Length: 112
Image (cartoon, rainbow, N blue to C red; front, side, top):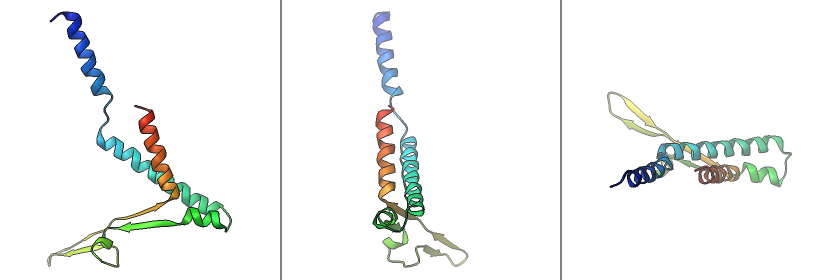
């Protein structure tokens, strides 16, 4: 193999690995995009006067971990006699959180 072919192969391999992002970075960017969108929606709800537009920005869908098992409190409790562990996770989505997620996804695609 000649030196020029070896350099070309090394450049090709390096180029492919430099374009890949870690999954944790992608999830973090999408999470913060969604968080920013939710905060923006709450801000719009705070600033806008009482109207249909305000209700649109404040309308949200709530998910919680305990709702999956039918618990009304929003917390899963594991009692192990000696100690008790409680697990809880609640997510709230509104229109602007989905918009923030889409903007974060767009930036991930645009800035490769």
